[in-house]
Amino acid sequence: MASPLPMTLRVYRKLSSAVVPLAPALINRRLKQGKEDPERIGERRGLTRDARPPGPLVWIHGASVGEVLAAAALIERLRALHIGILLTSGTVTSAAIVAKRFPPEIIHQYVPYDSPRYVKRFLDHWRPSLALFIESDLWPNLIMSSAARRVPMVLINGRMSHRSFPRWRRAYSTISALLGAFEICLAQSDTDTERFSALGARNVITTGNLKLDVPAPPADSMKLERLMAVTRGRPIVVAASTHPGEEEILIEAHRTLAGFFPSLLTVIVPRHPDRGSTVWRMIAAAGLKAALRSRDELPTAATDIYVADTVGELGVFYRLAGVVFMGGSLVPHGGQNPIEAIKLGASIVHGPHVFNFTDVYGALDRAAGARRVDGQEALVKQLGQLLADPATRDALVEAGSTVVDQLGGALEKTFAALEPYLLQMRLEMGAANA
Image 1 (tube, rainbow, N blue to C red):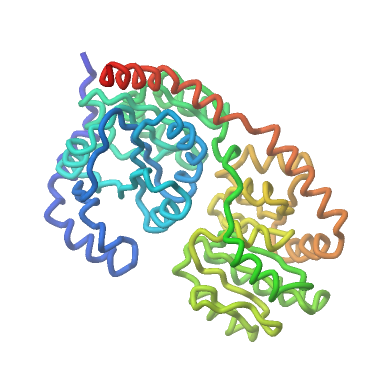
Image 2 (cartoon, rainbow, N blue to C red):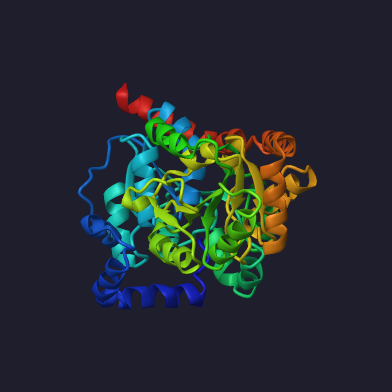
């Protein structure tokens, strides 16, 4: 007999039902903020124009871009088994990435708002055979309703941050009820395994970080060639996935470095592309010349900083520059994933706030496969050294590549853990076709 739900989850269920009449106001606000797709807003209410494919269906859910891309290699493996795949996420940016990077037969839907009514519509329509939740995007009604329907659920690439862990410990009955609904919890690291186990998860296994096994991002060859043509001969630094508070530091770093490298081009790729015009105004206010990629502008010889405020083009810019600063790390955001840049031959510089990728950056720093900086002065020093010394840059790239190779293998371990469920699906497919 299943344990009764804790009071917190029962209250949450009632409240999330009660606020449904407020959904139109919420949706309108998010539409105005550009956080929803007006053509697909029905998906947030569990409605869809897409048909469920026949046969078994694996439902994979990730919060946003990073989680969706982490599952890319696993999705390719599942496709090879001719199993239907439903991929859900919650952001407009992630939907754009799926459209660019994934085959058309992968069905993408926006995850429904976590109201029992919307979740019921979603599950009634899609009837998943297996649910894979990526990292830690745990929506209570989605999880409780799926468990009530006996949908097997597995947490993959599980991560419990040092921020979230103490908060969840204070709400042990709530998190243990949610984690207890998962048949297996596949964690990124031994630390994550210990934390999930302490919070009540059962059958926790350390499989490693799927983000270490992601393929290098693609690049449009024509766009890359055009950029290489207009920047040829210039030293280039790419600041990838930057957050508020970092662009000001990068602008001043560029000003200082340009005194030593007069033709320097800094490329700033905001983590959220809709901040492009804000970053452009910062650069102009600093007396520097900027170009904005969303306006189809290309850098000219007079451009100091190029703002790449588009979606899905990091593969282009990682190939353009040998020196990459990974954003989200000079401010306490937790850092961004350096793996794709390393796989494309970039030397990595990062700030101190990398708690979202503690193991990865720790291994890179210990092996001299990345450079840590704690502020603007150190950032200028490290970027300057890498721009001036190709041998140092090459050594950093080689050490980083070695670390990434050594830390890989999460895909194989994850796939092995899922094999019993996939075998059952294949048996069902065989019986249906007999």
